[in-house]
Amino acid sequence: MAEAARFEGASLALGGRVILRGLGFVLPQGAFIGVLGPNGAGKTTLLRAMLGLLRPVAGRVTVLGRTATPGGPAIGYLPQTRTPLSELRLSGRDLVAAGAGPAWQMGRLRRAQRQEVEAVIEMVDAGAYADRAVSTLSGGERQRLLLGQALLGAPKMLLLDEPLSSLDPHHQAATIDLVRRLQTRLGITVCFTAHELNPLLPALDLVLYLGRGQAALGSVDEVVTPAVLSRLYGTPIEVFRVQGKVFVMADGYAVERDSHVHL
Amino acid sequence: MFTYDFMQNAFAAALLVALVSGSTGYFLVLRGQSFAGHALGHVGFAGATGAVLLGVPPFWGLMAVTIAGGALMGFLGDHLRDRDVAIGVVLSLALGLGLLFLNFFTGSAVQATSLLFGNVLGVDRGTLVQMAVVAVFSFCALGLLARPLLFASVRPELAEARGLDVRLISVAYLALVGVAVAEAVQVVGVLLVFTLMVGPAAAAQRLTVRFVRGFWLSVLLAALAAVAGVALAYLTDWPTSFWISALSAAMYIASVFIIV
Image (cartoon, rainbow over all chains, first blue to last red; front, top):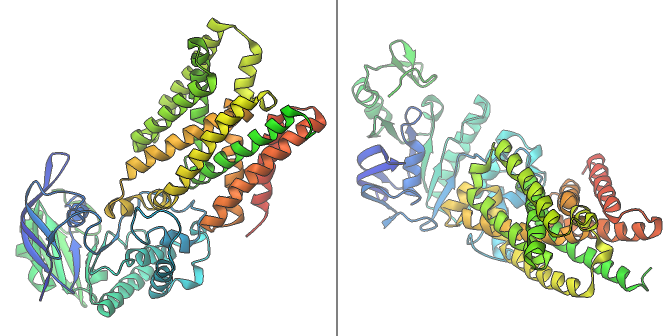
């Protein structure tokens, strides 16, 4: 299988502090990869490195065969939004269209670019509410539009940063299902960061688990084991499988649900 | 009322100011930065009176300070969030300094009032030409910046990942807001800058959620408020700035009750 991204001895730092050290793995193309790990483990940092927004302090990060640079190769990105969209008096269609074409393009969108905006809105099935103000949409509806925006430019790889946070379980399942369908249909690689493993289980090909500056990549059965997770959490971890779900426990606490385990 | 020179100048100045403040105001409201317009007005007061003290035309002193202030605000960006005490102190200091500079020069209350509340009937032909040059330049610059600015305003993290320099755009945009403030002060004064920059733009965004339509509607409503304000002032002999602020508020209130 061709490779989507390659980390070669890559160390990533934020504000002088090394968050992830000596990462070495290859993300295969066309896989649905769940990026998991406790708060502060470096999930967003990892995505930013793939986008070229963060240069590794050591080693190399290559994406689709080239050194990661912002605005470079075809990567779709759904960032965690700090900007509140709940006050935005702009239509969903115009919100999506804001990301169309080259970012520095001046003047109006060309016809082909407007058609692409319509196409991605169609792909995420958001046509019914694309004309309404973003401020009047539900969290799930906004999420769909932003996912559509990430599909602009026909990316070969999608980086989705915590798309499930602030969604209820029903919308979480619908989002995962939609991403999985888009991923298979378009044949693209998906990196999907999340706090909880279980909602992702039906869609996952691979898990990239982060903890204590390290990473483990493999199938759920290979990575979500007491041996690997005890190393990543730095504390004895037990893994229980109940009715097709996986529970990761440390000292009797489910480590995904609350952040009792500090690294 | 169209036969008098000073009325012709007043209408022309009102239109120019509406063009600049309606267009920059649209993004101010979209970005949730309405307060920036108000803040730059205050800072501009010190610039204008300081310029008089130094023998520089007040319009240019005002503009130099509002552009520099806007660029600084853009540069500081997120650092300004939740700093209302520091901002409030700086703004009151700017007004206080403006008063001091005025006191050194003439102590003229007329000049203070026209800076604080505007004096559109006092705009002469020379000022008008300067205003027109600045207005056309800044409107064209905003037009060129509009798309990247929209992207950087609504999706900053994504825009950054796509190679946009979000901070540079922020600095450039707030410098243009500085220009708009300096223009608006000629008509409504530093204390009422808000009225032309925020009221029409907020009303426009309630009446349409489409980007291009909202942008032009904002300019149109600002022009309506400014021109009608000058006309009503002529007919009633009440202050122009009062009429403009009343019309701007009426537009916003009406737009809240019109459901789109």
